[in-house]
Image (cartoon, rainbow, N blue to C red):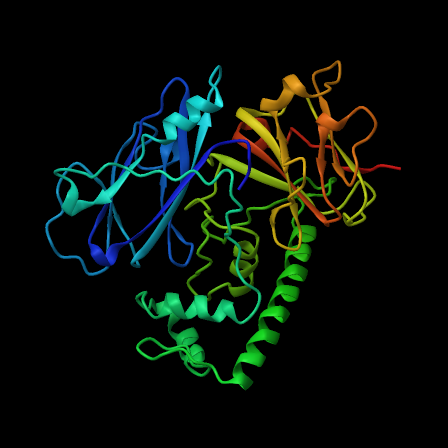
Length: 386
């Protein structure tokens, strides 16, 4: 995720019945944005101003497949295609608010089973901010165990049928134990590594072929399918590579990406001279004074091998406009940010450490405004420091 806003997430299993999710209304200090996803990471609902509640808050009801009992009134009803669901929401602080305000606002969320609606239990919150919270996929044979754990429970959708037949050929089949032979397990170990390299190459090629501005080396991290959604299912095909690359990079995408999107993410796929970003080098990113955002902007620098934070003694994976009081600003209100092994002299506050990793910087626009969408606002290319 990122460190600019408090995140709150949860998981549930609809095999136990429909689940109620209470989302608080937008206040003068905070607002909630985010997605509810199924076990395949496909968004089944947005919440907040871009969701059904339109920022006014309310109760979402997540209904499992095949549920036939009467649905009570007063809910935003979301029919889930599967049983396991998850959500990740950002609690965004508004003008004049503090991190504590956003944190307290996030704790207004409530989640419980519909069967408990008459007397919901006390909400439990777990704060993992002082933990190393593991969320990454495994690129070894454990990946296939994870896959089995999903397909052995979730309903088979039409789009899945051909793949289910192929999975059965390697021992992944609902109703049967998963126990690959040593030969099959060795093949799995090789295959998942091959997939990692294949998707790395595809991700780079996709970015190079889709510059956000024609004269800059920036690409959107979010590239939806032809319908502007992220299921990549058309009338004639399932766009396997397009979906594979997008979910290789991340998850929790909006149902539809348009000019009402709550956030947009851009990443430089090369420096000013067209050279790919490399480990062990320091780069400068110039952020203009007039970034067109209703809320704030942020830079987070990821490890390109994992698409996750670069951990460092400084515990600083990113910088945002909230940090301006601590940054060395330019006289015109712009700011130069740096990422690399060491900070330039006197600019440690403006620097994100990369710890010898190949950097993947993402610049986020929270509440992108008209000049972003019409592309009259342009980010300069990142520059390799001498």
